[in-house]
Length: 198
Image (cartoon, rainbow, N blue to C red):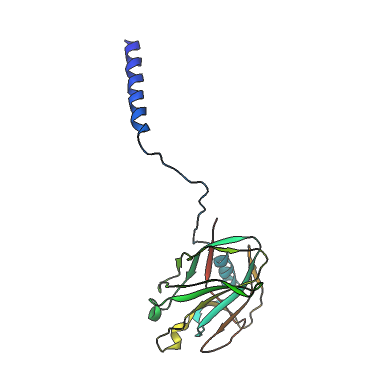
């Protein structure tokens, strides 16, 4: 009896194994990096400014908000985050990254962002940033529906800004806001988030 049960069990196991063998295998690519838009280097730096007494406010009515930064390690940008104003929520912002070392724009594309909170878009092309190079990240809104107030954005500010600010791998060395107003150099840190691949 026991031998017959063993043979039956062996046959059943073989049938199950052969049935599973016909299914497409699940392939997991361990080399695919994550791109998580929570707790980025920028978010941590911005939060530390607010903890240190800087004001988190939506202000600065100029067409261009930008900050200049460097990184302590090579990174690839996988998402860009920003929060639009309600009146221009369907109007794309031009996002640019300017390489100070070569005096050239290495990324330039228009993206629409949500108005209720920071939303994220994937870049239209690969953006690789090198350690120790100075870059300027800017958001530009020139289609403001005849009301310059529609160009305001979320910023951290204080009466006296003391650049540079460093947190983790990110150092912000300066900022500016200009266009239909300004310039107002080193008065704000605009909330323009960069997410790097893990």
